[in-house]
Length: 167
Image 1: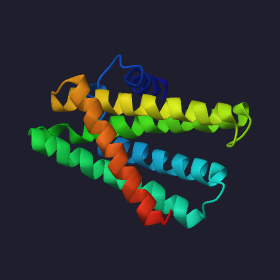
Image 2 (image 1 turned 135 degrees about the vertical axis):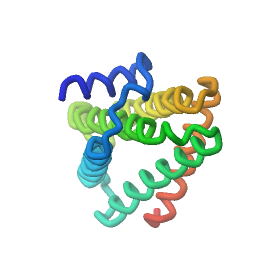
Image 3 (image 1 turned 60 degrees about the horizontal axis):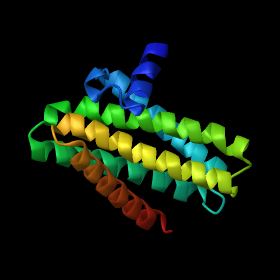
């Protein structure tokens, strides 16, 4: 377990690329399930004005739209064979970021705390940078293009999930 976490942590620190992530279907499914469950837990725990249905809808639509946009981007570049490693790296790193938020929110004084909001913003920026790095490595593009694609995908996923959840 520790070596797997180290792989994702090194990707989050921009030391390693997604090519090192295991792509066995059970592993991919496990990372995906872990990310969904933890995201649901954190959303339910800290989503003050959201119903459980809104949290579930938002989580699932966000993840599905990121997966679909990643598939489209890799297909457009002709590197669709890298999809399992890329999507596992994206969701594995998201799992670590979500875990970090779950730990930091209570320590920072709750959801409404300025420290929590600032920390969440920094983690969001870090997440987009990491996803951009992953896409840069997977798509054979510059880091700037990877970050631009990751930012565009995040905006698309946010807009789609907000609409679907009725917020």
